[in-house]
Length: 132
Image (cartoon, rainbow, N blue to C red; front, side, top):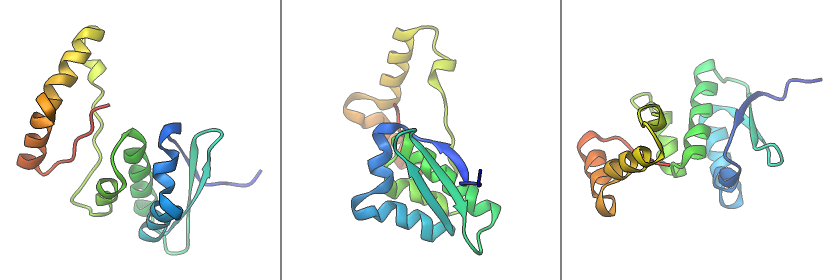
C-alpha cells in the first residue's frame, strides 16, 4: 500500500467548492502550497501530498485551507491562510450551549439581524467568520 498523502476529511457538500470551476480552486491550492491534492468524492477525503520544494508548513497551511472550505468559507477567504498573518480558529459553539435552543440563540446572536453583527465583527477585527 503506497502513501497517498495526508488525509483531510471534508464535508461532502463542499467537494465541488474545493475543486472549483474547471478545477481552479484545487489548482490554486496546489500551486500556492507546493502540494498535490487527490480528492476522493466517495469518502469525502482529500489527500495532501507534498510536492518538490514543499515544507511541513506548506502542507499544514494547505490542510487548513481545505478545512476552512469544508466548514463554509469561500475559497478566496480560505486562501488568505497562505499569509502567515492569518490562522484558522474553529470554535464549537455546542461546547458552550446547554441545549439545542441555546445553540440556536448563540448562533443568532453572532450572526445578528440580517447578518449585521457578523459583518460588524468582521469589519472591526479583520477576521472572517462562518457560522454553521
